[in-house]
Length: 309
Image (cartoon, rainbow, N blue to C red; front, side, top):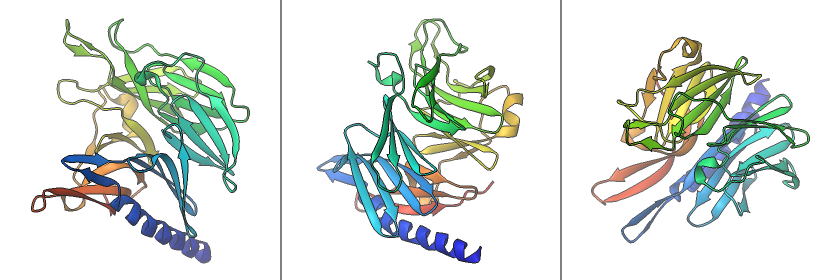
């Protein structure tokens, strides 16, 4: 057991070294224009992945291991990823790609919706795997369910949300617990007559996709922006740009509003979160940025932040 822990710590150290150089290059200046790469991280045993879109490389997937860094370019942006067994699942705006973990050869490419995609708010955003099913937060198309073995679309569901009949919201985040499926929504439309935005908040389902509760945010006090979701140690994390909101899952069904218990937006040395980090029980790790007023410039770096709960 101790030997296994030592190996995993060693692999993590190697990955962190590679990530330092990667994060450092994630901010670039062209004259007065500042470019920040669109980065997300994912970690498994022995591997760390980075994916998204960069100014230099376009759409990419990077794999950090003890041996080094491997980069795979793509025509379409990787929106989300999971490593399941000996396979890597990559979600793109309207496709799910399956790679062999060791050879990285393509094993499957599946459509994520039967509907015609023509607007940005309809694209696939995040997914979770539960048993033999893949659940995809698919923007204003709602939720798509695929068979993990065949890639067949088994269900597409658009849920009734607490807003006006002509309003549109998009499902941008998904997380699954032992009992529930959580879908986070951002508004697409705004009603100028009623001066109300479309639904922003959380939809709670059971595993059979029965709606249990819809929780709206307090729109007069805050807004969401394409929130992503993850569950770690009984807490639901919702990332909105450089802010991460934390909700205890045990309180969600009792709540009247989707209101966070904690907001994480101040990080080490007043730095800002850059992209989507790896969220663990006691830490966040990923890329951060900081403004230097003396040089009138931003720098980017790898860091580990330990929140206090």
